[in-house]
Image 1 (cartoon, rainbow, N blue to C red):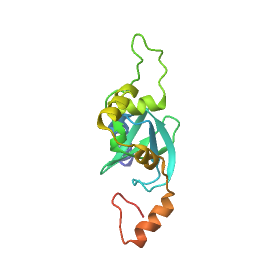
Image 2: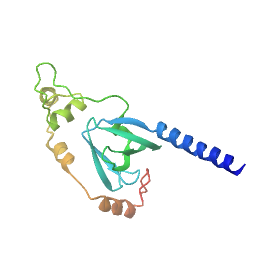
Image 3: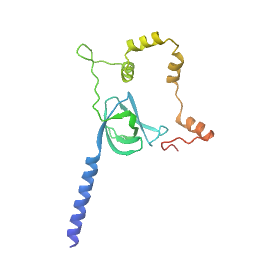
Amino acid sequence: MGIRKSVVALALAVSLGCAVALAAKVMNVSVRDGQVRQTPSFFGSIVGKATYGQSVTVAEEQGDWAKVTLPGGVSGWMHRTALTENKVALSGGAAGTGNVSGKEMALAGKGFSAAVEADYRRSHGGDYAAIDAMERVSYDPATLLAFLKQGGVTPKGGAR
């Protein structure tokens, strides 16, 4: 009787393990530089990077965050807005060279091309130098957390 229970328990454990493995889903990175973080927070330490179109395995979801594993084995959290279930592929078209710059990819992600962006700037006027400068600003996460703590602000998403 004891052996029979052991065999049944082992079979259930193997079945559960298979079910968990099958529950993991594959998603694709939909941003140029996908940051994989140690914790499900924009303030979590970056433990890896995923590139546009790369497939990742999602093992768990927590709110707007997904725990992913990269093909090289790095595991961490990515925000759901950086992931899609759709297949992501770059194509230069029939006449294209197949080479796409990072800037072109970022513009395409916004629905722009270099020509469309130039036309938009001409037709809407304005000086975008300040916006371009803001996009280049970078802050150390520890400095940001100290600033928020000093102001009594508690960020959502698991920041500590």
